[in-house]
Amino acid sequence: MRTTVTSLEGSRQNLFIAGRATEPQSGNYLKSYDPATGEAWYEFADAGAQDVDAAVAAARQAFADPAWRRMTQTDRGKLVRRLAELMLEHADQLAEIETRDNGKLIKEMRAQMRALPDSYTYFAGMADKLQGETIPVNKLDMINFTLREPIGVVGMITPWNSPLMLLTGTLAPCLAIGNTVVIKPSEHATASTLALMELITAAGFPPGVVNVVTGSGRTAGDALARHPGLAKIVFTGSTQTGRTIARNAADNLIPCQMELGGKSPHVVFGDVDIERTVNGVVAGVFAAAGQTCVAGSRCFVEAGIYDRFVEALVERTRKITLGHPMLETSDIGPLALLDQVSKVESYVASGLREGASVAAGGRRPQREDLAKGWYYEPTVLTGARNDMGFMRDELFGPVVGVMPFSSEDEMIALANDTRYGLASGIWTRDIDRAMRFATKVDAGTVWINTYRSAAFMSSMGGFKESGYGRRGGFDVMREFSRVKNVVLDYSGAMQDPFVIRLK
Ligand code: NDP
Image (tube, rainbow, N blue to C red; front, side, top):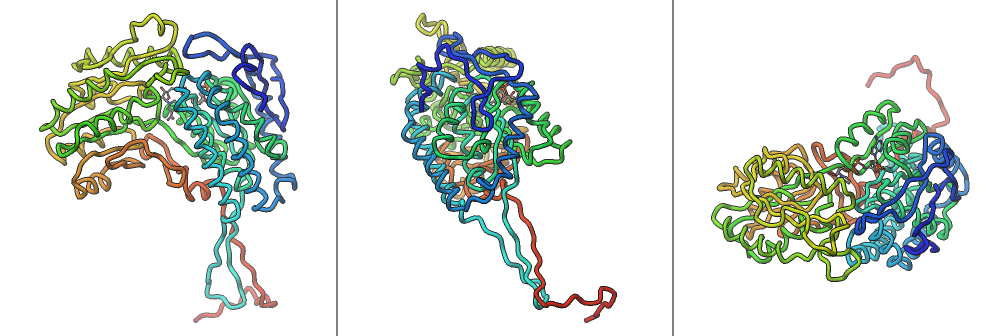
């Protein structure tokens, strides 16, 4: 892979259409900024509707091309497996690009990039295992069966918080099934997706199977979401944008997969080991500086241990090291966007006006070495209530609101009192209680005595305003394939159509 952080520095990156780096029709480029310094570091193509047309046309052509369409499932699986091998070889290089582009910690990105290839390998193995059924239909000399087919061109609009990881959950199965793809990464982190295209080419995918249009959401993203040449659209991002995209998809009568925001409840009962649970709550909300859709940002603690728990949580939070994302010693890096820092600041300020108190953090760090970057201190807000803005809306920053509860019924009511339904967590030694929570909570994922332990083999997705559709496991293979029913009469005789035989 030729792309490195050094080669990107000061460079101009083009679109990737039909296997080639392609200049945008407008000739316009946008700047990408390094969140650790706030400075621009490379430029990327600002695609318009015509570029999106070209990318979708390339993907449609590749879908129809026998080089892809008539490739055997096993050979498709081998290509996806080859991609996994190449990704593993270049994992550290991809990690450095991601860190520089979106400010995630290098140690976290290295671990993530070394793990991602396993996901491609898993789906590669499914390429030749997707099968239809034979259905008994009470007719002699007739076979009724189903075929599972690829659906066509899938549009993927990805966010800036974990571009390659969030892409993997749908790109890997789409390729294994035989679909073709047009990706629109976020304008705030495009580099890793473009770098991945070098590996797609090196692995041997035919041109046009995967295409990338960079640019802004309002132009390139909007043009892709409205494009009549798509068979499905996958979106990861905010609920607000998700609504717009779903409306546009409805005009084309195509299905969507929506992985939207969350405001996940994290519940702590009085029978827990406080130190271990504090670590779980801290990891659940402050990992990646809170920029994860599953962040456990509403923490409900049983009244009997509330004071002790908050004290331990505050003590642990104050020990978190904020620092440059390339440093191994940093626990939390900057937020990916300056707007995100302002958003978090304004929600914390309004939370204080609404009656919450800052127990830890609550401001930008007052440190010379971090002054230019987009940092915010990990923050614990006590006196929180579900009707406060920071408890209602997704902040996508390092802020947790804490409040006590007195009974299991109250806890369930508080946990479900949100328009979101992505994830949830409970800490208790009482398995009956944990299972009651698991069945009553309105969330697509329930973690018991752990948090954020996602696995590509298991099905993930949200309820309510967190979206719909599943990624991971075998469920996702069904999402990106279609069922065709075939009826074969081998009797050799077609009966008179107007003679009806009653039983
Ligand atoms: P958006 O939902 O606006 O962006 C997500 C993706 O959609 C980006 O690729 C964006 O492109 C694209 N996009 C934006 N507008 C349109 C449109 N009209 N049509 C098609 N595509 C579009 O999220 P933001 O980046 O503005 O972040 C806002 C909030 O969203 C965050 O604070 C967080 O709460 C939430 N979020 C949730 C994520 C999750 O994983 N669930 C991920 C990211 C954000 P571009 O960036 O180029 O404008």
